[in-house]
Image (cartoon, rainbow, N blue to C red; front, side):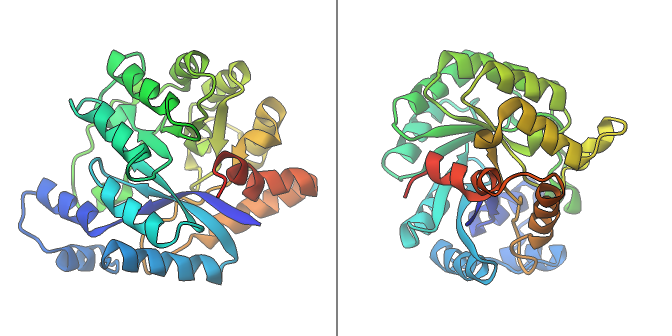
Length: 296
């Protein structure tokens, strides 16, 4: 069974927000034509498209991430239309006054499961009391989790559109996730891309905290920051430190017509096979851990 723990849900609201940031009155279809991407339809229709895409690639379930703050409703509509296939994640900006209430509403009234924080993007340290309040909200909802992007942060769509990315990368240190994970031991904390360049720090945090998970998503080009490191060796080291029960396969799929990023799956599957990882452990990585964290 394949479950994908990292797919972005690029809704109409997502593209409208990008257009507004450019300071233009550009329509969503025009913006998507500029990108060479297909414009999305209503959330329910985009969800149906994703369902067909998952079926075509034998993927059972996927996380859908609302990829701008304030787009919880789009992913919630997608999850409602296909509750057995999708788990709702949503980006939250802790600097906003209504962030704790948005977290509470998203996890309760809207039925979403994971709050996503991007400290480098929103310029809020994980030591900030505003982040602690969000973690407190998450801890009060059984089955909820937190996703915290650490390390290098590059948003390809912003680069394509010439939008500035004033990211404070120093704020995305995985060691700071350990403070939250220790304070809220019942909450799973997911660090995507093995820490995205801060691999050593991510390993240290995971070694300290049994509730820290890694997702394996994206091309993982961050490995070039560590001379001699390969993705195969990153997998082996993560398994040695965190074990197979704390790795979540993901692709970082996002836009159409590319759709589900099968090449990521093929590369990671080949690594698992070449590393002689047993079938039971591989089953956990590619689907079982996702099922355990997000039961249907």
